[in-house]
Each structure stands twice: as structure tokens, then as C-alpha cells.
Image (tube, rainbow, N blue to C red):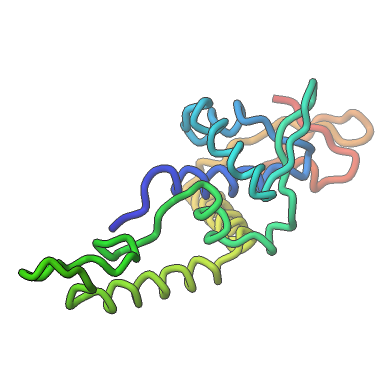
Length: 184
């Protein structure tokens, strides 16, 4: 039993969307490029996510996708189930016909309850992890990577102008400085 690329890609794309939707709708082409996921595959996944009311779509210029609910109200289980990802460790698919005796009668195999319990625990765990939890983890990871780069002396220095048009050098986010604008 394993999670297929369908579930992995759906969760990854939803994290990307949640991290970037503050600037307006996010295009699937942009997610495709950042996450190296086929655009046509994303279109299929987002069709399912939209039908399950996890995302909203905006058509036309400036269009794209945004979350239909707050990230804290979307769980990994919601995403996985929306894209029809099976989470089943039983060999019978939960039908309880995983064993056939010599008499031809079907029933549960000896390990059915073990795998059924694993299924419940997986669903419980995925239901306990919100999309916001994953976004927060990703932002912490990005900050740690930026700190590591700064400590290793690999910080990119951007040329900035302060509000008076005077060029200054700084590393970090220009948006954090009032009146500053970045030039590349």
C-alpha cells in the first residue's frame, strides 16, 4: 500500500496554491512550472478539487485558482479523497472478501482487521493535518534555508532604493522596508 503520485501531486499543488493565493488567483501554469507537474495533470486534479469545493476558479485574464475555504479548514484527507486516491491497506478493498476457503465461501482473511485498523489510523492522521499546518512547515523550512545561506555567505544582495531614490544594498525582503523598491 502506498500513496500514488495523484495524491502527492494534489497535496503539493494545494500547498503551493495556499502559499501564493494572497496575491490573487494562482494559475495552474505557474504551479506546474514551480512544482514540475504536468499542466494537463494539474487540470484533471483541480477539476476534482473544484467539484469537492476545495478550490474556486476565476476565468479570464488574471484568472486562476484560490482556496474555497481557509487553509486551516482543509485537511490532507480532504485533498486525498477529493482526487479519488484510495487509502486502503486491505487486499479486498474493504469488501471483506479477502479470503476464500476450500468450500468456496468468501470472508475476511486472518489479517483483515490489522489492515482495516491501519486504514482508520491513516485516515485519522491525514484528517488531523491541515493545509495550514503544511504551509507553516514550508515557510519555516524556507526561513531555515535562507538562514543557512546567510551563514554560508551565499546571500544575494539586491540593489534597493529608499523612498528618496537613494540606492542602498540590502539582503532580504524589500517589502519589509517601507518605501523601498527592489531592482534586479
